[in-house]
Length: 52
Image 1: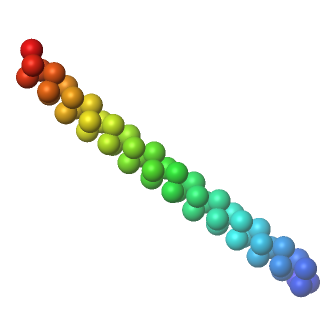
Image 2: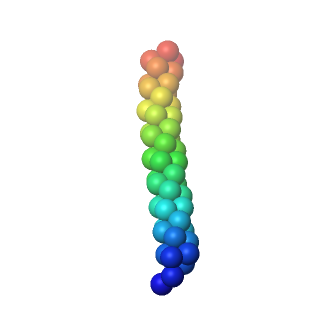
C-alpha cells in the first residue's frame, strides 16, 4: 500500500470509530433519559393515587 492510501485508510478508520463512539453515547443518553422519565412517571402515578 502506498503512503497516501495508508493514510486515507487510517483516516477512514478513525472517522468510523469516532462516529461509532458518538452513536453509542447518544444511545446511552437516550436510554438514561427514558429510564428517568419512567421513574418520574411511576412516582407521579403513586402520588396521584394517594391523593384520590
